Length: 344
Ligand code: DAH
Image (cartoon, rainbow, N blue to C red; front, side, top):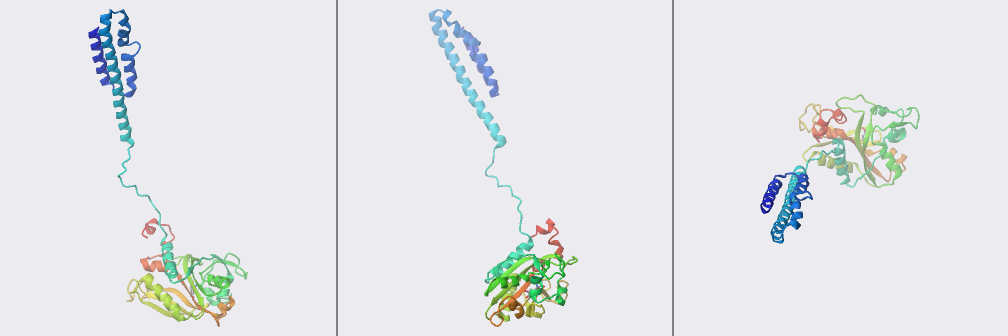
C-alpha cells in the first residue's frame, strides 16, 4: 500500500505538470482527489487496517493528499498568471509611444488675411463690425451719392433680389460701403470702424474676377480729421501688411461718395517696381480706394459737415491675398481644391 501511494503521488504530479490549460485542472482534481479517486479509496479503507498499519499508511495517505492539494493550488496560480500575461500581451498599451496625429482643419486663406487686416486696424483703435449682405438700393447706391441715373452704377454690375425699378429694391451688396451709411445713421461721432464681409457682382468669372469676393471697409469720423490722417493711417497699414521696405503710392481717384477721392498702390511685389506682367508694366499694384467722406453723405446721415469730417476706404481681401502669396487665379479661392487650400 505504501508503494501504491508513492506511485500514485508521482503519477499525479507528472500528469499535473503536463496540464497546460486552466480548464483542464478540474478533470485532474476529479481524477486524483475526487470521491472516486484511488487516494480516496485508500483513505476509506484505513478503518479495515490494523492500528499499527493505520498509523503509518494513514499518515502517508494524508501527506500525499496534502501534497497533491498544494501542487494543484500552485499549478492553478501559475496557469492563471500565464493566461493573464497572454491577454495583456495582446491588448497592452505602450504609454511611451507618441500619439497618433489627428487630422485638423485650418482657416481659409481669405479668413486668415481678413483677420490680419482687421487686427492691424484694431491696433490703431478701429472697432470691427459686420453688416447685411442683402442691402437696400438706398444704402448701396442712393445714400452714397449714386442715384439711379448716375454713371457710377456701371462700376457695380449688380445682382438684384427685387425688381430694380423699385426704389426700395433689395440687392446683394456690391461693396461694403453701405455700412458707412448705417454706422453714421446709428451712432454719433467720433466713429472709427472697419467692416469685413462678402460682396457680390454680376460678373463673368475669369482669373481676376469672381462674382463673390470680400472687402474690408473703413470709416473714421471726428472733428478735425484731414487727408493727412487718411494717408498716415493707410500708409502705416500697407507697411504693416506688406513690409516696411515696400513703397506706397497715393493718387487721386474718383468715387461719388468721397471728395477728394484717392487710390493707394504698393510697389509691385513681383518686380519691385521695375515693371512686369503682374503690375502691367507700371511697377505699382492698386490695393484700395479711399477718400474724405463727401459732405452730402455726412448731411444725409445727420452729421454736420461744418463740424465733423472723416475718411473712408475700401479694399479687396482676395486682392491682398493674391499679391501677398503670388496667386495666379482668383478662382482658386472658392473651388474647394485641397491642394490649393492646404498651402495656407
Ligand atoms: N466701395 C468701393 C469699391 O468697391 C471702394 C471704395 C472707394 C471704398 C473709396 C471707400 C472709398 O470707402 O472711400 O470699389
